[in-house]
Length: 375
Image 1 (cartoon, helix red, strand yellow):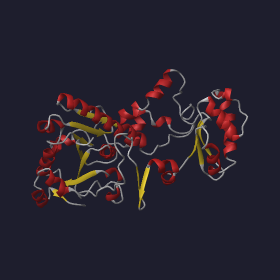
Image 2 (image 1 turned 180 degrees about the horizontal axis):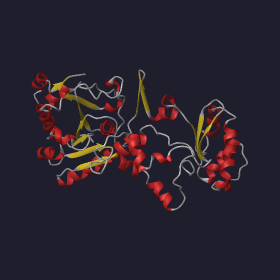
Image 3 (image 1 turned 90 degrees about the horizontal axis):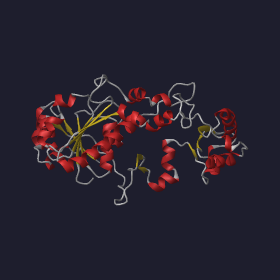
């Protein structure tokens, strides 16, 4: 994406993750941060991995000269993304119609939870709110227990940021053909519902119950579940195919019938015996048993443990330097080497340099307070 300029209006979570992903792919991403930052999460903003690969300018968008500075940036940009409630960008004077007056080919990406229209579009919410309404949250957890929150991976980053990136890339292709930009309305509730396409397909065939923890891929089946080891660790089992299930049983030393794998009436007894076997050894011992096989069994690692796993280390899946860890860029491209370790910039660290490079009067904007330097 070299040569693509993205203006990211400061927000949190999925919007910044989308911007980071575009930067990982080579886009020039300029984040416009508000004075004082977001003030939502504790910690040093200079350590926020979601800001890696970006230049960060600090502008007070309540001041007309700062808004005009952003509109000047828009004139040479390919994409603008924002994550406000519907109507906020318009009230700031930075809505799509105003931006298109400056640059008709601009792709305008909007990241929200509920979308630009609909009965809940003006309501507040967070990841858990959106996946709850989409149906995704209901299916995560043990049978008979409450739904379990999957961090904010399914909503914010899966159903939100990923869909914003896909939409922006598709809209960029069309803009290069037609010369006209458009709004990409990326709503987390839409993306989370879209992620359930395979589950809807299974429900349509009658092979998936609209219940939690009783199905093939939600922990209900004994061959697709998590088991505790003797040292309090856990092993993840995903032995779906009969040949892999046979390898699981062989590794565990069990004489269960492979032909009964999908017989629901046999599941309780199979789960009991598999659990008993796993409880007899440590996580490390079971890893040694199964890692050389195709049984689809893996140790459940913590985030820090995963960073040190030989496979992730070999692929650069997690990059660590002086105690600072971050995931490596994904996906990979055969035509481009992967970027090395890069620390995120502090908010405002690039204000003067970016404004000057884009032909704006940085000194005047800083003098009036419309622009600020490093927070």
